[in-house]
Image 1 (cartoon, one colour):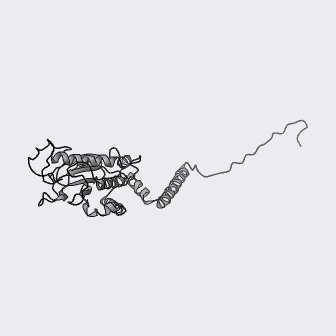
Image 2: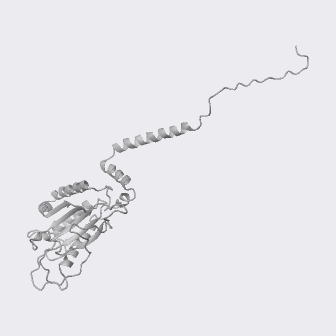
Image 3: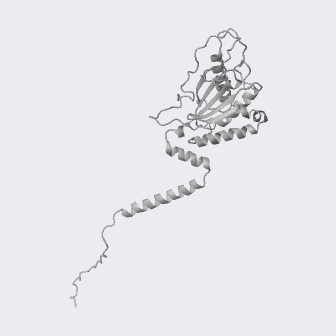
Length: 279
């Protein structure tokens, strides 16, 4: 028994539970990887249910993040889908234009005068004149009623694309007469420029047309028949998207289908003293 008045010390027993070594932050890395994998899964599932144009736009961005995205229009004229245009896409564009022409009786009758070919530069669309039907007023740079309809239709279709355009004017070999100091050079360039103005008023973006070319009769469609009406034509070239820096062939000045870049306006050739105007 403890003596009366003595103080008994209080004993406190602490139990220390044992545990393994320090786990560190490895679990955080594993959890982060799991969350990332789940996010990637949800993005893939979402992409699989999006529209085809959206898939192509996203694909083109990852193929060229600094190029395609900046060329996609955002205004009324350039509400394009930002597609990475390939020869196959230009083939689809050709079909779209043909379908649109079928909805317009006046143009459906002229389908044989519209030639569309996919070339090394892009899609070439040619509006060919004939002896009975023309897209431009005879001897004038102004488009006819059918010419205006066709150019507006092209502008509405091409304005949706991020591609740049070249517009070329061609005449036949018959000399132009009737105006001093005005020849086939001026006529071909003026018709191409008239086509540009009309198309820009009906769908093309402000910077979509990169060049206007006037060839006169230097690149005849039918060299063996230089006076044939089909030599008189307007060509609209839908170029492939500009390659990345360091590649050959920019949108501003590729080699033409005929073998060389043309000047915007060539020097005027002297008007022939004789010969009926036949443009």
